[in-house]
Every structure is written in C-alpha cells, then in structure tokens.
Length: 158
Image (cartoon, rainbow, N blue to C red; front, top):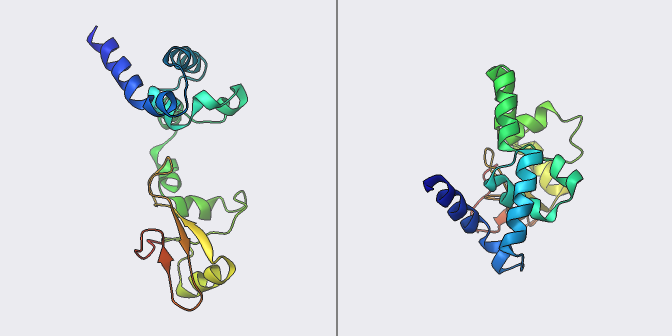
C-alpha cells in the first residue's frame, strides 16, 4: 500500500491547482489521468505540467512524455542529443524549421547581432538555456535609450 499512497499523495500535490483553482473534480482528474497513462504513457508530472486535463486526444498525442523520451534515449546514441540539451544550439541546428527570430548565448551572440535583434524586437522573451516547462521565462523590454530592463530588474542571461 505504500506505493499507492505515494502515488495518490503525488497526484493530490500536483493536482492542487486544477482542483482548487479551476474547479475540476478529483475523481474526474483521476479517470482522465488513467486514460492518459494507458494511451500516452504519461506520468503524473506529465499530466499536470502539460495540462493534459485540458487537452483533447490530438493535443495529448503531440507531447513527448518522459516514457517516450526514455525510449528515444535508449534507441539512439547519446551523441545525437547534444544539440537538444541547450535551446540556442537546438535553434541554430534546426533554424530551417524554427520560424521565429532569436538570439542566443552560445550561437548568434555577438554584440552586433544582439543590437540588431534589440532594434527589431524591443520586447522579447528570455528563456533559460537548459530548463523546461516554462520555468524561469521572463518578458524583457529593451528601451532604446536606457539599455536593458528585464522583468526581474536584472540583466538578461543571453
């Protein structure tokens, strides 16, 4: 019973927001999660972090769950994943498929490139290089006369 209790505690901890703030019933979320687990092999973390409870079948199928990632890692050489570890290396490698302008820390990071980017985009989003799930994302405003000002008041880490 220890494993089941831990799973239920984890479910309740991660499901606090949709239950308390959005009004979802715990029973509905549990059945929804069970279906998502059986069809998509998603973990409790996948289910709540990617808001599976708000997505239809097509929306759920678009996500790469932790189990999917484990299978991908197992079936491919580890050297193939170097470009996926940092956002700017990924964006540089797959720029033909990424249809947005960006500036990086490892690639495309000269002062001239930054100045040109800032001129084109006085408001931009700053993302941590190696984090995921929307953690650490900031909206940044770059005034033309006073320099760089970010949401937290600290200089951007680009």
